[in-house]
Length: 87
Image (tube, one colour):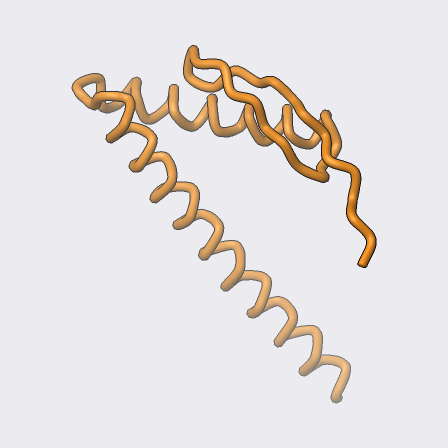
């Protein structure tokens, strides 16, 4: 079994520094971190009373909700494509 090269990238999310280790490219990890940072700041603007822990959980819940909606849309689109191919 071949082991993928691990990259170690330092990013800032919601004014805290994190070191991410993984196989993804530096630019990909930086993009993901930037999107998480944006989402946390967006949620914070509407919920200024949340501490960072609750803010992180709410961000995760919102992000997973967005992911599930996209996954459903993708499945619907694939179904439409398959039905058109069968005609």
